[in-house]
Image (cartoon, helix red, strand yellow):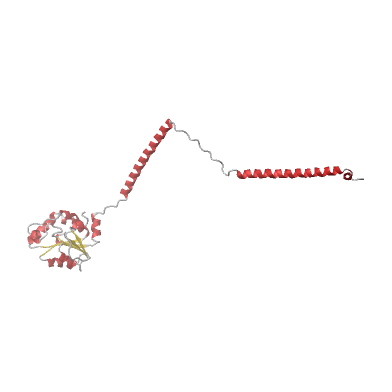
Length: 261
């Protein structure tokens, strides 16, 4: 049987053309699909990762809202003042609570005397207003400012008072002045612990024999001589002596040494 394409050459040509068109149309479709996919992917990537924020609309201030705002501001200011006042009051309470407590006279005496249990003290210029034995022949006056400290020392320490006198009448005047001042009523000091002598050497001997923890005097020479034998000394004088030892303290008055209490 003769071949159709040999009989009809033009049919072969047409068949080849149609096959080519079919292949081309398929290629175009594939290309078009690929293009659509690329465009879609590009749009997805191009879209922002976060949504756009909506900008709130700014509202105008009306007279009524302005009044409310002013009133609110006033309330805030008043509240701030009140809060500040409360904070200040609270701080004052805290400061008062943590304020150091002032020590009592008894505590000061014990601290200043370093827990010493025996004290010797001269009378003239320390306990008495008079400063010389000659004055004691006329009168004896207990210093009122030293009385409180003296009584506190007698409660805590074994106290001995001593002085050089020129006659027996001076002794009587001194004992009477101490009794009238109430020194003997506290129970810590008795008349037997008030000693009298006729020389400064005798007073030095009293101190060495008693061996006190503290000796109080106004004579710088005696203070210097006793520095080797007495643990602590207090030199009472308006001026500091030229010669002094490391265990000798200086004060203008006995009460000043304890803080003028």
